[in-house]
Image 1: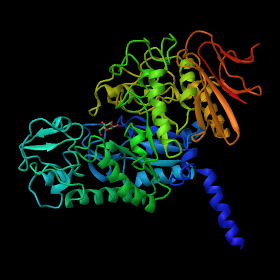
Image 2 (image 1 turned 90 degrees about the vertical axis):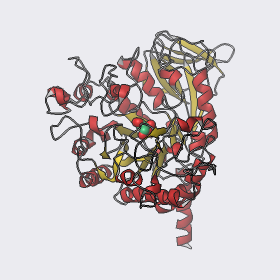
Image 3 (image 1 turned 135 degrees about the vertical axis):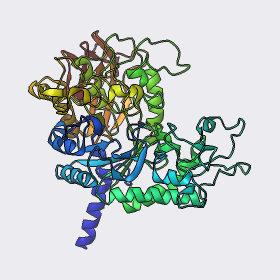
Image 4 (image 1 turned 90 degrees about the horizontal axis):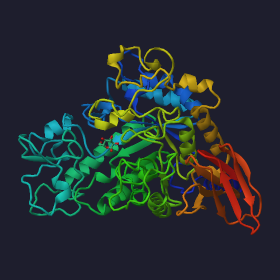
Length: 561
Ligand code: GLC
């Protein structure tokens, strides 16, 4: 009887914990820190970051208040796409160390209560991968069907895939299908509706694609069994070809890979790079990104002029998070609420502070610590799991002039090495300056971790405070409900409500250089300010009973009712 009682106690505790019981139990309290390993900390003096460097910084990472790390790829790579052209999926690249170094990182991180999530490049390999070298020689070898070899280029009706045909003089040619760059041949997970006149189009359950799935599971198990806590899955939507509505790709994940993963590794996380949570959560992922990359998602908040959504009109003339205060919320709101409503209670829509593929938060007109504090308050108090891109916690600046490195193109500008202290190369590396992975900001007044630590008002210390507040208030967490309280036609300030476990908060955001106010429906009790960054923020009931929220320029505040 007592045992039965305990069993029910545990069951009910679990039910309260995670909103979706199939999610890993730790996910709802997770805060991620994304590290681009070549740029974090070099310990062997070659000018490129390594795993030992990450291990040496774990105490700092923990001090920020994060409890999970996502590492960009660390596998043996041809380095034509920042590590996303994998040569050996089972081995750490020499530039970072060895597999044993990675296991050491996992163990040391776990000792500090930090999870480690790797990148899983599921859709392609390097053209130097042993599988591809064999596949291009002849059919019917061990890895022949891991790739797709069209025997001719069909005319039309095939548009999106035709752009992925790469001409080759390999014996299996004349074409293979790539996923991203030419050096990244697509792995063969089959076609949604194979065309019988195209012999290279295999069904998703044909022997080749099935072997491919087994290999993917093998890779996942290899690293999970070494202790990693899950994966961020690169281009997760790309697996099945000619699948415009993604139904076959969703089915493949959901009915096979996810089912298997959930049984084998119930505490493992799978994060989609899909940029469409409505689809990826349906496919079984725990969370997906909603950011500037791939789709327009939050571009209008941060990078309006740099990538406009076609047909979005010409109304606002700047991003929302800009002191000019000319931005709008509608474009973002429509896209966000569509995704948020689609996956509520099933998975998370995550707005990262940045990532390795687009401009940093600290760029263009948003380089003052005050501007960044306002943006961070928003990003770290929205629903879903927060992701902080390394360096964003100190305001590491975008370098628009960074030369393309390892196939990065313009993306080098956001992959600049971390700035630690006042020693040579800001403590990133002892290599001569010309050997540093990507040139660092030469400004002698550049912000470093050391300076930020010493200043109680620094962005770093603000971020620490915010994450602490978030961890103490269920209403600021991943699962708390969200509702816009202010108005789309009067976007400054933005006020949103978060509610969980009987606690209710309002977050007030004003990136503009003007003092602004908004009149909203009254509440029964008066709220207390519990956090934020402001000269002044008030909540007053006016004569007609409505509530007026006013906030100083470039400010953010959190009220609790
Ligand atoms: C993802 C990665 C990006 C990479 C591409 C191809 O979008 O984030 O860096 O270039 O996939 O793997």
